[in-house]
Image 1: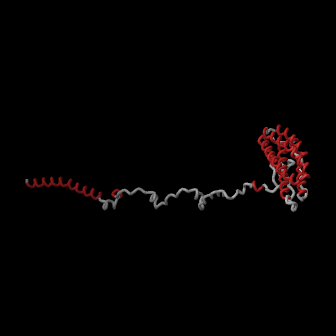
Image 2: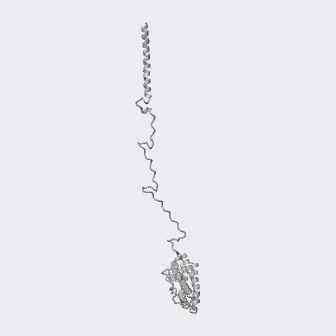
Image 3: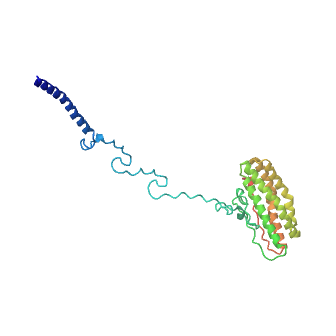
Length: 282
């Protein structure tokens, strides 16, 4: 009986110990798998996850930072272009080379003064006044003043002639008024020159001076009428009366008066001769 009891207990112990032994073995295996140093020689599952690749490490090796976008100074390669030079500001004290100096283009000496370009010359073909004779040397003390007055008189007369010739074909009212105004101013200025020459010429200048004085009002009145009503029709009508008084009387008398004054001043009679104007017949 004791033997049976011992056998029974032995069998019972064996049946109980076997599962326990399997559990112990299983626990050891689990423990071994969880240990990084023993499971597969350091499996990847036991290691912390690798950090995500950054732009500097992705694709193996560090990549260079992206190149900066080309700027206007480096676009297209090559050295940077120099900034455009600023335009030089005009020097207020230096006259512009491209701008004509009007003051210097007109001589202060009598006999070289230019007439209005719009009117042409005394014969309607050029814009420059006839050149007065070169200044003569010698003569009486009055000679320099006489030569100046004669040259200025010639310039004024040529200016009037140029305007009258242009008025014969001008259609623009503003230009008609401007031409008449230029002629009126020059004709009025002639009176100062006439006085100087008449005084110097004495009796030899008497007749020429009288004709100029007598016919000048007709010229001034006609020019004033044109300025008041600057139309081609008005210009045409008044040009006839102006030229009727001026061509046969005033123009030759200017030459005669100037020559008389020159001779009385000990100079050669080299006064300018003026062709008649033709504005009324154009």
